[in-house]
Image (cartoon, rainbow, N blue to C red; front, side):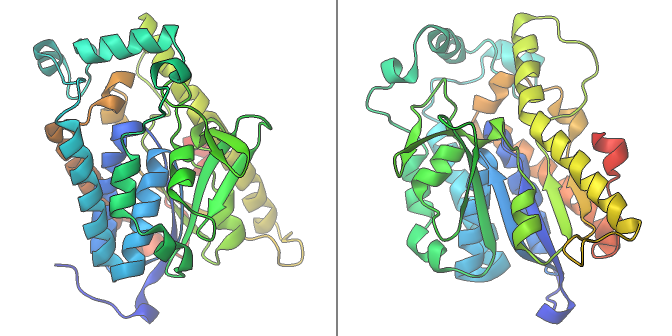
Length: 344
């Protein structure tokens, strides 16, 4: 069990959670291990897509029960996802089980979905606009309580379809629709309408954006829990692999640009220019599983089988534990990830 530490001894940090479908179970595992170690205090959380769901559930859990409340809330949420996934038509085939850890490329359900979404829009395929995670979120998160909470600052990001601008929902205007908007893949779901505006998945414009926690939180430490691999081993050659890499490049592009801007500001501050105290050094930390994630294709993001999500959870916990063991002392002092080497 983690040793309890008083608030004055805990290190404050902000969390930035990437999206990536069921791969969000990796972030669940990492969060579970970070929250178990009570030397950390979470000031702000920003998330996109599956990261928005993890962020909202974590913030809700922190509000009702502190770190242990957040761990319990995440477990309930992902258990509900796995229970629902047991009834999904997209189950791994025997070929999938022999050839990969979590891909469902040969699943009849996946093949059917992939084919249909290339020919028909969600307005044709899903005219009643059913979202399988709406009821799970409503059952797991008290959004009214979350809007009143001051335990951790929450930011959920979506893409405005009409204006080409990012929308950041904070805890004051968070709702189930805001979270679903952040995770609205346009080939699967109708755009989510909020206050007369229409939104798609936030990953197209920030996966996740870092600026909400930079502008709104005192802590200069940002821990990025990454799901999408930045680098791959070889050029993709199959049609599906090419499409998967196009999506990964798209969803990583805004993060790479924002990291370049952070590196530029950090160099300015290091040189003595802080714009009258308005600029600060941002310390970047990362938890990831690049080698494992680059072996998973796009289809695996729709695989909600319990065995696969449990594996991702265990992998996330292991990487979270490794981060704490190797880099905890650097929090509050310096970055444990080189922006130049990792992102530029």
